[in-house]
Amino acid sequence: MHHWVQASSSDFSGTPPQARSGHTAVNVGKSMVVVFGGLVDKKFLSDIIVYDIENKLWFEPECTGSESEGQVGPTPRAFHVAITIDCHMFIFGGRSGGKRLGDFWVLDTGTYMLTFAADIWQWSELTSFGDLPTPRDFAAAAAIGSQKIVLCGGWDGKKWLSDVYVMDTMSLEWLELSVSGSLPPPRCGHTATMVEKRLLVFGGRGGGGPIMGDLWALKGLIDKERETPGWTQLKLPGQAPSSRCGHTVTSGGHYLLLFGGHGTGGWLSRYDVYYNDTIILDRVTAQWKRLPIGNEPPPPRAYHTMTCIGARHLLIGGFDGKLTFGDLWWLVPEDDPIAKRSSVPQVINPPEIKESERELDKLRVWSRQERGQDGYSIVDLQQKMGISVSSGLRLQIPEESEDQEFVELGTRLIEGDVVDERASMIQMAAQALRQHWKQSTPRTLQLKELGSLLRDYQRLVTRIFTTQSSLTSADFGLPGTKTFTFYHIKSSSELRINDISKLLEEYKTLVI
Image (cartoon, rainbow, N blue to C red):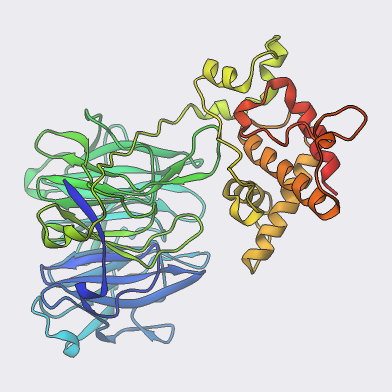
């Protein structure tokens, strides 16, 4: 059993990292964790914050060395890769604004034995040789032994990549690996982890946008083995993670620990679902398992970091589609002293989220009616198709700003528009979505929109009548008066197929 414990000021001194996502956090020896870069509120960062494990101290080291665009060290960036070899941290690529980067840096931390902030660390931009990787972000990398780095995949701004490069940190020479046989689909936002002699790659977003949940192993990276480089797709038993990207995979003894990331919400939603499940790949039994958790996990997130510190794991930052996190969490075994700070035990083993085939997203509400089955309710329809419908109305009708699904639907319609403030964004999203529904027909309306449409219908009815006069029973269906038939419907699952036309008709009378 493990417990999640939110870090407190009593756990360390100094100032921990500010909120960020897309940053890196790597172990340098057993003495420290080095956090670099990231993104918050459209601002790309280039700061370094170090956690001195022995002294439980956060500090910013003094750095000198190469200058880039007027500053010491790399320019601000996020979604780069960071790998440590001995006391050196190597940085490659990433993104700054809309620009993908292809520069290569090393930070010399001097020694494993940290003497607080007295040491001066040195940045150097490296002149590399050989087959240089193209600029990219969302790549994945790992250390091969104590001298080499392997880099694979990413996004170059135009296409997803599947190439593999090996870099010798002594000669600074890059070599693009020639791999025979079948290749994993191109991807970005995946993880790459060295396990013994193999590189394990999991998940990521692939060409055309689908999020994947496949696991691949690459052999031929260890010189002395003299193996021909080749990929093998692994299909392991157990409770495998759902498809995702932006997750982390961290080594922890005899297992690999996977946390978080984001995927799609299935065919009822095109929007990302963020995860906070904790899954392990047991290296002894070669199977996936859910890690038993004795309390509530941190909020779901992606593009965070997880770092192993002894028997503990440290979670830093991340992003959930709206919020950039600045919290720090410990994942600890139950015999850890700080496990007692966790909430009342409640075993959490998140259910598997099973994604239906993507082409089902093209189905429309009226497809069954055209087959003469309009007498069925949507509940009957979902049972026949093996799907579910979002739950719709809450006990109290939420305002637009509190209706997450409504805001997300509208935001998709205004993508690309420049909006500075959240209030303006919500207002624009609401206007766009209401105009969309005003122009919709029962044949074009999608099942995933029903919950939001019903809530907005009820919201507008309430708003109009509470500003004009009190609602009376006559307004809800008695003869000879304007009716709002669906005001008391608690969930979109209660609607019948032949209700949709009437709901849209009444909704359009409410939208100015």
